[in-house]
Image 1: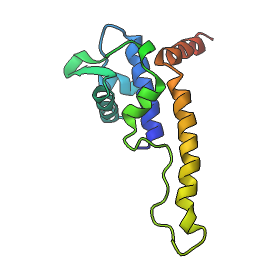
Image 2 (image 1 turned 180 degrees about the vertical axis):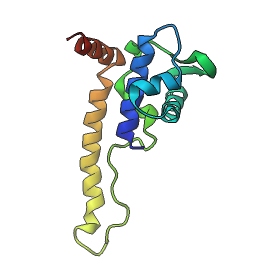
Image 3 (image 1 turned 45 degrees about the vertical axis):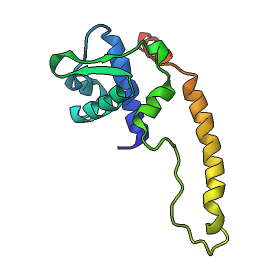
Length: 141
């Protein structure tokens, strides 16, 4: 599954857990809202648990937030589900005898790194509480 998809699913999961504050949600109930198989929800929830963002119990207790949404940034969520820690990757085997191939990795790494830093700064400046506030405002319209 693509990181972007896992990231969106993780944000959806955290938003759902906030909606039932104080009680847990099962992977089956969350999967119905997200529109994916419960196994995907369990996998992403496991990533969130390992990152300290949720607590889980087997059975009907399900998953719960481990800390308030105001203390969880989108960067926290992104890092929880992105094992590579980079948005872009450079292809591994360019032709070193080609004038473009011999320079492409260094050049792209510089530009991709700059884009990564800007994206991470934006995510770090947004909390899950802000996301949930936006969701509530949108559903009230």
